[in-house]
Length: 424
Picture 1 (cartoon, rainbow, N blue to C red):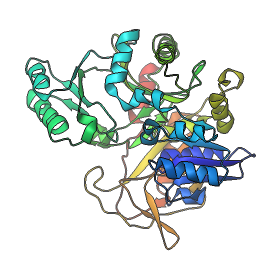
Picture 2 (tube, rainbow, N blue to C red; picture 1 turned 60 degrees about the horizontal axis):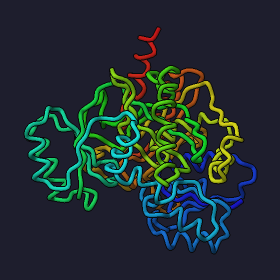
Picture 3 (tube, rainbow, N blue to C red; picture 1 turned 45 degrees about the horizontal axis):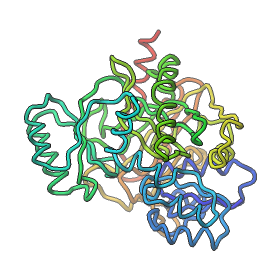
């Protein structure tokens, strides 16, 4: 089989690593891929949002199956365009991808179908938003409606911060058209949990839960990032909470999308907060999370490609989706200064033993050697019987990866270990 994976980050590298385990896979193309993915796939310099070029490449190269991994091409309708040409795909069509593409849509969906989430208001006019914020309680959360590279959410602790957020999103258009509308919602408290789920519109199979670490520095200090590391499973996500989420959130979301004529087939990401009043949906994503994928897929014991094909063919109920009982940890190695200003172009070296456990996010090739080309450079992953062992091994492997200007948090998984201790 010839497989094509659209995207070029650590998530895509993790997906490719899992797909390559299937003996029927002859070759994997990554569009565009990156300098690290090039060791495991044939990288093709076609951008993830160049839909016409992606379709032409798939047809010309007789691609047997395609995985569209990032949000942008999904929201733009990449799956629709490929399917039209007879290329089977993993990922939702354009009508279903709106669940991430518009926060206004997803919040209204939850309200209409009684899916628990934060109370909210939608604004299309900055003056109306400012009037509302004048009498609001703080902290409060302000979200740009559309895609914003994961940066369109601002937690305002004061009225001044909230006003600044409205001005920058709606008037200065820092996120472009994504800021034409904003969602203003109540600030929730509690542990956050990420749950990815396979669904074919008829069956919903949640994957192992995970915990992301968004802040740039130790002890959750510093700026918000795309994620500095993850662990799985999330100790706060108990069996009892999982059952409650399945009953009150996961299955109702699948049913709601069906009722709206937007059947979702692919990976549906649930960003949850476990509040004192119960689990609440913070956000939906229409694809695998990054870097959550880097800990979830290494724990998957089933064949990823077989599961994906079952989703596409609406026969998910017929395949076993099994995860290891162990734990996983991924430590992101970034460029010093990320997510603000940072230098790039430094050569990346690592031992051969550690290479299979490294998922590369931001690297290019220079004279055939990988060099840093992004803020988040790579994720170093370990799987073990216990979370403590997984964390220890991941950090030991970090010591075998080198590039100038490297920076990483030293406390990934610390909060989870503390939660496990408190449980006992």
